[in-house]
Length: 215
Image (cartoon, rainbow, N blue to C red):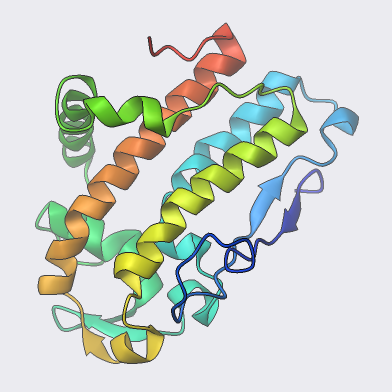
């Protein structure tokens, strides 16, 4: 990934995070600093990393700069020994489908869940939130891309302070998080996935059609 650089954001100093144990939160962002020197077409250069990045930035602990994003916080999930980062990566999403923390989500699971989110976005509980999730970026502008990633990271990081680590990393270390904590996390995960899906579709629409696709 020679064409990509990584930089960090201190949300606390920017006044974006409530004072808490997460106030040192940061984010590593892949940024196309050498796009002009890469032989790939600009559409490919923006599309290839976007597919992973927009999903990754929706995971709260990807915007937390403490405890290696939760990787050093040891927890159990219904008795399964793991770490908090893995819990938010897979155990909590899996529990939405009634699956074990380390199970593989099937195509049927994914398709059914995507259909549920699409309905919520188009006509359900998320419909009135869509316009607040998207901005019309100029995807050819590096500054606009930076502005977008900061906005997305800021939205995601709020959940770190209000739920994920609201009592601090010490309080949640060596605890069981597969019960009430996981259930409370379900709506956070579902909305994060819906928000990321909308933003990715808008990103791709702007690249290929120069339009958000949302009226």
